[in-house]
Image (cartoon, rainbow, N blue to C red; front, side, top):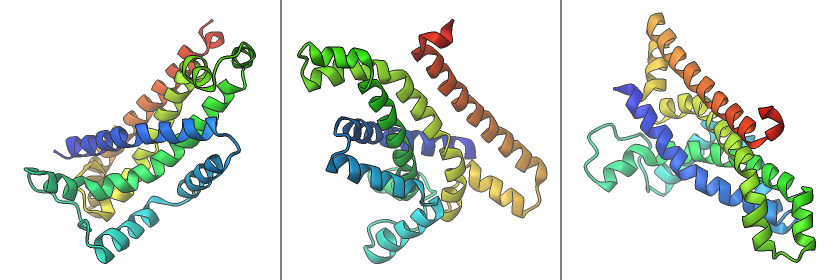
Length: 221
């Protein structure tokens, strides 16, 4: 079915993007106002401002047309090898990860910086705690809620990007089915696909709100 294909694409994108985004966001926060922070901030801001269709087009021109590393269209047959897996998912996942990682890294950076500016972190520094201990034992545990909130909100951008990506790479998912249904004037199918996307978005936003409530004691009262 189309829905499992889209869920697989979203799951792979999440598995790839979350660790990278967390690493970049935490690194930028710890190295605040350094060259590393400026490079990460500039790169992520540029990717956030770039639409998915442009990233996908550049990826096709560079990786498929010029370097011949990947296929311009997704492989829709049975996946029986690593090569088939890369042909099916590499280009769509790469395009979606570019935007999701950028958005998630920026929100993670903001969440960690907020915790590093808290009074309990300043107290730990005054007591002689090492920078690594301050980050790992004090800042990060208290930033888990805001970071989870950032992850949920960033993944909601997948719902818009997946429509563009599935169409460009001819990926046989739910979004491309909805685009085909629009062309065929199959309005009941369009409504069904739209409902699924709306439910997915509401679940992600609900998860983000729950993370905010759990991480903030003032909101639990």
